[in-house]
Length: 618
Image (cartoon, rainbow, N blue to C red; front, side, top):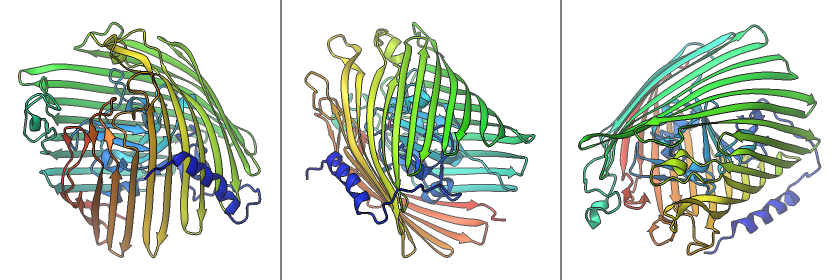
């Protein structure tokens, strides 16, 4: 079947408003019941008013999904392609709208995380038990955040609580000798709040790499047909309070440790640590304006070991600070302006010619509402110690129809600074590299029709000066260009007591560079992905199911190594034992499908899980 999502979705986007009843132009102000989004504008807005395609996953949905990892929680969601090399704890990469995993910005409580050497975060080591909510914003947002936000931004907020004293605990067992447990408490009042959580997960895992099928040296370059286990320990703290009527102070800390066995010829075991610290001081003397100062630090530390002991390790330290002002210019118009600073510093067993760099960014964002029309415009300049000045921007427009329908369009630019590995890794780096640049257009249509909620977005993102391996110099170079084109459809409703959420994405990530690979699909991206969640409560009993599917993908730039598509079905059950205790059970990959996300690397087959959660309702 031939599918042309861009032209089809544009036609739908233009036709649906004409078919909708009551298209008189009128403002449709947000209510207190609207879900809040922060990441798209660096200010609180209603999710339904966002001109950037976005999705919010709250704590209730995280618990209902019974996901043991971010990979399980995010798989199949709008715009997301995932790869993983063998189950829990194994290297996981996230491609957003076809952009590379190193073209994605990930924040934890507003702090940029990830390795400055590899250029991407260790998503597999971030435990879901420490997460309160996740905001996924699709499309370039360098005009707000600077480098790396070409594909979009994912912001993770750690657990928090503002009510009375609320303890909680969970313990569970599962297939492949899975053991998991967590405990925490929250305490909040009118003047302040505090919370703490700890979590533990351990599994014997599966034989992650099947390279032995073709003899030694295939796939993972090792012959190790054993189980590749994983262990994760994590803890988080957060607290805050009001210092008088106008001042608010808050802080948070997260530490996650990963202990991972894998198959490799030189090393086959790693120990990783991710730490994030953040502090915020906010001054809001009136509803017309506020000023917020933020400081943060993130660590990414990884050590590798082999049969003879320690092989090597690297540590990234990222110090960050920002000052942001939010001002109401007049009713329906707001201005956000600020400055932020980032300093990357690396240490470890590998010597780099340059081991630190800083970046200072100045930004401004305008938001306005004029009757039925909505306007957004932003501009940012980054002064990078290595690459000098770089300017990015965005311009968005929306039209609100009666009945809650929004037609929007957004043009934005982005860039990515080369990582330290790209520039300076011994015998591989190229210090002459320049930043990647992108230009993107998004057209969206969203609305509510009776019990139905839906969004439709189409986009095109052109990325220039892509950094990739140059076969002529045997070094990375700015030799590639890419065209990322596609669309996303999400639908949600409640029918006869059943909660239905469906998501479908199509992306056509094409190599537009001159040469043998021109016109090929970029590697490790499935063109079609989808997810359907169906849940219902039956009094004390709850049932849910998730269908997750992805089409085939290629594992190489030449499109010679094909990895087949797959579809899996998961089941989950809950039973409330009184008001405080809940028993949970799950079956993942019910039909025991044999599939891969990366060539040679297996995914778990059918798995079972059983756990109990204690959470007083009073």
